[in-house]
Image (cartoon, rainbow, N blue to C red; front, side):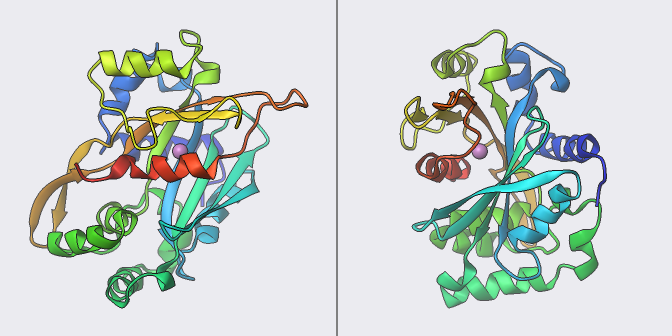
Length: 267
Ligand code: NI
């Protein structure tokens, strides 16, 4: 595992950029070509609730660099469970880790997922690069499409594996933008397509968090039966509000996160 938080995020970032080239354009648009000038609100990772690779296994890599567990979230329709983690330095991204509750899925999906997880070397899970190690298996495009019928989340994992699913620009730290509406408009003017599931803006000042996101880039994946372009990763934008005690809200809103998951939907 890494012992330096910045090194871990640098690796996650470059791995994310390799399949999400539009992220560079997002940074240029929001006032910087330097990654260090954009503060990320959070990143998100996905996994399966298999004992070998459950969310706690992913979380241990962040706990090793100073993160603490904060909130938990349930997504019943998508059969997901999630937790978020925070660092004592508020400029370090929060971390949102979700896991698919595999036992609630069909026997067919369970068999495919178990087969994928079995191919992960036990030692790989604690290796320094695990959080950006991608897939440890190779599925066919046919299997990918089969998973897609039941769970977009499982299909995405089968193709992309372990990596940051998205980074999230903190609008609070942007100098050129004060509202999420202005950020969204700048993105649309530059030709980006936003995720409109649940509306362009998820959440509100009342729930202390507003979020929006681009739709995922399309990137090639080499499946066992050929190469196909499919949705990879996306960029999210978050604006946080002060709570009654004057402190900025640092949690997540499950109803909004539920819609953000759909940013990787096939289109
Ligand atoms: Ni997010």
